[in-house]
Length: 109
Image (cartoon, rainbow, N blue to C red; front, side, top):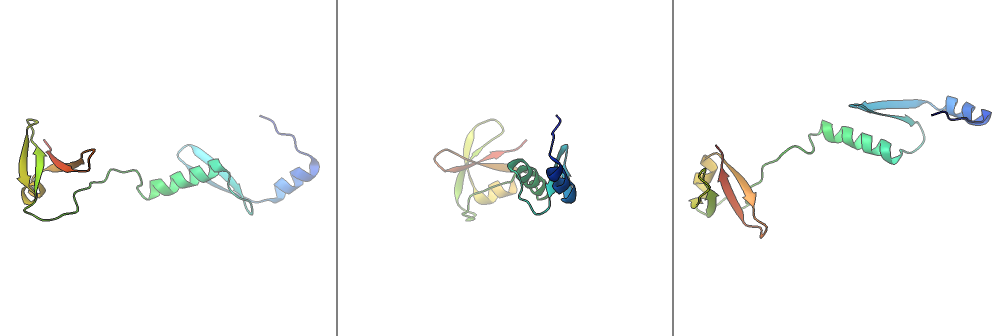
């Protein structure tokens, strides 16, 4: 693509310093003193997100840490049994939430 600029526009563009940053294969140049375009903002946000580990998986669990509270636990055989929180925390389990907001644990192989 060829962009033809008038002489004053070329002189102004040449006088404006550029800051270049890149993320993966995306690349953006920012003329100092001007705002970012939406694509440049997205590239910058992607760079910040990657640096901070955004999007990585996170574990969640019920807020109630009462060790005696009972929860459903899906066993390796896909059967559901009641287990207390203490036992679930000691076993290799991952927490899931049902559509109604109730938690259940699933044992990991």
